[in-house]
Image 1 (cartoon, helix red, strand yellow):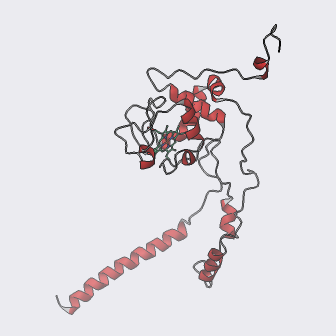
Image 2 (cartoon, helix red, strand yellow):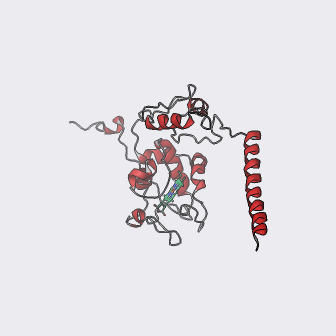
Image 3 (cartoon, protein in one colour):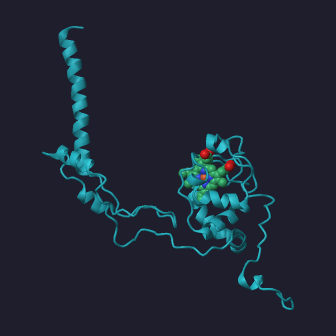
Length: 235
Ligand code: HEC
């Protein structure tokens, strides 16, 4: 290969790279990246930070590509703890209202499996409800009453593999309230269901995913009326 040939190849390669860069630049101009102000997804009762993306964008140091842009970014990053995240005015951050304490047995007795199926849609990004269908998470078919981490075809985290016992109603309720806290180090990337009622509905739905559903826990009457001594008894 002589020098002339090398020069030709070199020019061709550089030219192609340049062409790509120019096309990329033009595409960016024609189709600027935009951010939706409202998320396209919205899952009821799953807590998320209410961030007004539009105003976040406006307050983002402008002109990154222009003069002084880097200094702006450096400034912004070094003060990142002090930056207040703008929150949308119309949707106040969800603050968990204090829930009246109703025991799980009562909640499950009142639960609506059909509503639970709706709420459990959030689980389907990772779980299938069909037998033997593992996804990011193990199949939830027959999970109520099943031993914890018992799906042989699924590779559980060591945190989960170390668990013993089975999924009782109580344990499911505890786990689904705050998975990360209930089983530290487990790999279910899900914040949890805040409302006890939602959890009860979801668990009631999970219960149906079995040829022989585990009996619901007995409701123990603890209401003030039932604690009153029966008529006739003194003391
Ligand atoms: C982002 C993905 C994701 C979402 C959403 C999710 N899970 Fe999971 N889930 C996992 C993973 C991964 C595991 C396995 C955890 C491990 O091995 O540490 C798991 C494990 C479980 C287990 C234990 C199963 C067993 O065999 O012991 C239950 C029960 C469960 N999830 C229920 C739910 C329910 C109910 C929902 C919806 C309310 C849900 N998950 C939402 C990923 C998810």
